Amino acid sequence: MKPLRNIRVLDFSQYIAGPFCTALLGTFGAEVVKIENPKGDDARSWPPIKNGFSGYFANYNGGKKSVCLNFKDAADMETINQLTAKCDVLVHNFTASTRARLQMEYERIAAINPRIIYCNISGWGEDGPYKDRKGFDTVFQAVAGVTGLTGEQGGEPIKAGVPIGDVSGGLFAALSIMMALEKRRQTGEGENIDLSMVEGLYNFLSVSMAFYAFNGKAPERMGSGHVGRVPSQVFKCGDGKYVHISLNDGQWGKFCEIMGMDDWKEHEYYKVGLNRVESRQEVVTRISAVLSQMTLDSLSAKCLAAGVPCGEVNSLEDIERDPQAVFRHSLDYIDYDGVRMRFVNYPARFKDIDIRQDRHIPSIGEHTAAVLAEWLNK
Image 1 (cartoon, rainbow, N blue to C red):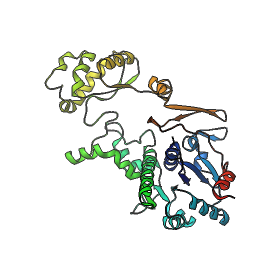
Image 2 (cartoon, rainbow, N blue to C red):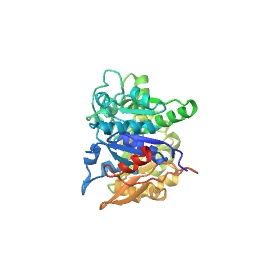
Image 3 (tube, rainbow, N blue to C red):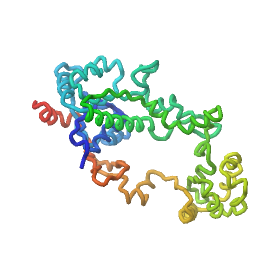
Image 4 (tube, rainbow, N blue to C red):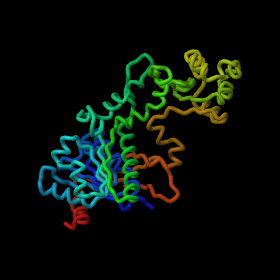
């Protein structure tokens, strides 16, 4: 069962946030038609590229139908208007000036289709002093404070290793669209969604904001460490492999047994988490010394048996072999134009909802004739 199987989506977006949003809608059955100009989505030319094929583009556009229309051609723009009248959802990431030039503002679109769910995904939102600024995920991370909180203690700020602004923006957009579709089901009215990716990133700051409120200053950067819990960071084992250990007061005693730190197991000072935070360097130094004499496999086995949380620091190659990922079918594979592509599957499993995805990567305009015939009888 695909709950969005009767929903039609026009996707004018490029890069990650918008295409990820519409890919999620497609996972649940929506028919997603990607409108591209003759050059195609800019992401088609972004690396990694092999045999002229972009893995960047492939990850967020599988299963969509590509319709090629020239935004500078009056007849093609009229076709876009006709498609708009037939769709349920329209997603884009146009700047304000581009929206105006293409006559794609919400008011005009809603006049064509009053029931449409119109979603504009932008870095800053449609109003305010930053509304005309340009940017990409890494810029949004910086302005949203994420970069300032990330990095080694005493070191320079760094970005997250993955595009969290784009992905969270896509997630919030998809959720907003589904809420708007439910509102339309109840009221018959369409909706105008103005989604800010920077504000999406603010949602990651909740704990840091709490420390700021209570202490009067932002938490310091501390690498893989946790501002309010010790131990909770990456450690190096004796075999050169890395592990992340994180635990609470209830698990401290068992952890001390594993580490051979019996003198700290019931110690009135060290068994209290707030005290360990105060003595972070001392605690981390001792744990590091013990782990330098242990292998990762030995530590993992002991932590698993004792119910102490720890996790191997996996590489991408490790993830492919990870027993849990294999068991859950977390990854999907297709061979495309000589490249074995890896895709990440939707993380939830449902009793009745089918989340199997069409992974076909469309060429530019591959479905133009079919979509115009089906939607407009052209």
